Image 1 (tube, rainbow, N blue to C red):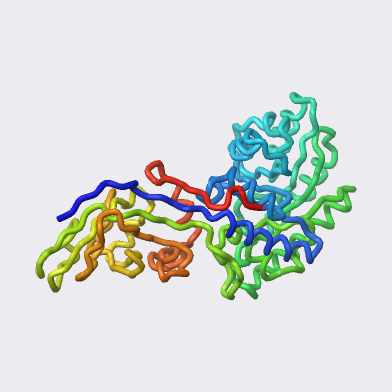
Image 2 (cartoon, helix red, strand yellow):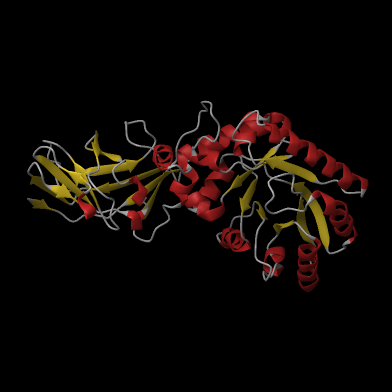
Length: 376
């Protein structure tokens, strides 16, 4: 038996790959006359908001999108001066800090408009707002029946500048889905109402999937999210490069005899004598427990099955007659170029989406390392 202590786990973020993806998407948008908003919410989908934001801007993004005002202000604190858009906060949020720092704010109701206007009065600065129309996703956004009144109220408010109107697709990742055109029609009708009230807003509705497949819906601005991280939201090949990889290492190897069982519940039993490698990552580090019995990893360049259940802190890998040395690299997921699993493979295996896999990698015990930070 050999034993070795090494760093628990690490995600590597390839900013060169991210810049490639942003440049590709921004090029598509530019061909339609649109600018590009790189969506960096949720700590840039687990990739690190500040370094990703800087890389995205260097590759052609002119806007950055965040969910919360706190996320936007963190970017401002880091010295990022690009246009920032924030779209979802609680009813108790104080928008004054965002207005002072030139963060554009979403408005989905007259009550929200009033709160933003009140914050603008306190700051003595007009708020830049984007009115959101619900075109069929039925989440946030103003319903069509209330849209004319919201537009009228916003146009009358001296404390706000209506910069844009926007919406979000429900099924753009299914090209040809009839809801896409229905939502586009609702969006066009809402734009007509805004124009009739004397507004001249920018329009944005295209997410990653629509950026890739519907240039007719790029309008003034596109908002790619998952695609900038190299994960493809549409069922056709695109030149996107996965940005994140997840690695650990072997800390212990041992040989077991045929008939020996492994991990909780003894769900896996060796059919022959075999070598096991212990890897110090588990569901506390972003490995879904639902992958138990269904996952493999790359050890020394070879795909190896994980034996038994994923534990909180560790997995056990069946290495057959190979005996990987302590400290040997274990790739849990990556780009797939070396035959390793991908985040998309994990997602497909457990019936979720790769968004959930990568955003789940923001973990205290998982170190983060960046490649290509100094490149441009």
